[in-house]
Image 1: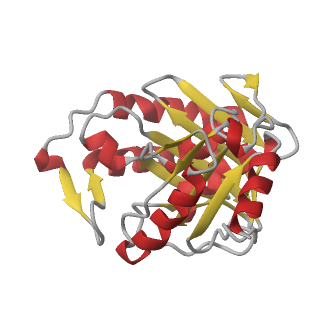
Image 2: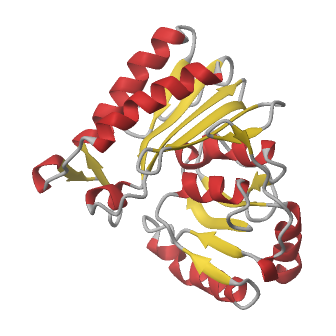
Image 3: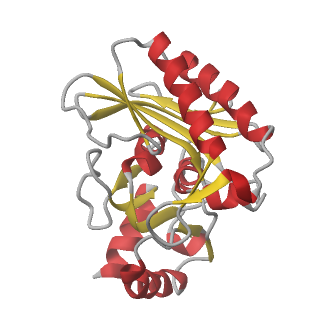
Length: 254
């Protein structure tokens, strides 16, 4: 199962690598800096065709699709064709393709691919997490020993004050802060131990579905900021990291 998903995602990455996004290829969606390009649509269409051919009984939920309803039963792919579209448009070269597979509302597998670096983060339930085939672990760095990734929830300007207030508190405890523009990669970086923690006030399921099982299989956890389980049928806040950093975060919040 996982190899079939990885193969499809690698092929889709070629669309990104061959892209030259000009202004004529970009349109806006609701919210600040919320863009979609013809390449987002092309990658999603390719993945939908490829994955539904390999898994004909699975439903498909993509960021650029018309339906955002998650089936309660059965298999469903939750896909972000280009996570980090603003990075993609500006040639920042830090974007990813994110494909998660949920079964009866629970994540079973996830693949997050950064074609610019050729890095494939992947996991299947109870089988561990891997980066290009090598097992990864989130480690045990506390906030004082690690960096922290975060997102600004740019489509929700009403959350700016609370986002940056929390960021200020975290920055006083951790080594430094990182803002990359791809939540899927941020969570995977925490899974690989590159950062200790990642948080964002609001994300959509396709932003975190695949990465959530990758970090859990790497020994960490992905929950809402208050510690409650993530939701796959609607967006929520995200706190992802290793157990030590998560405990430090909880202590800091008290």
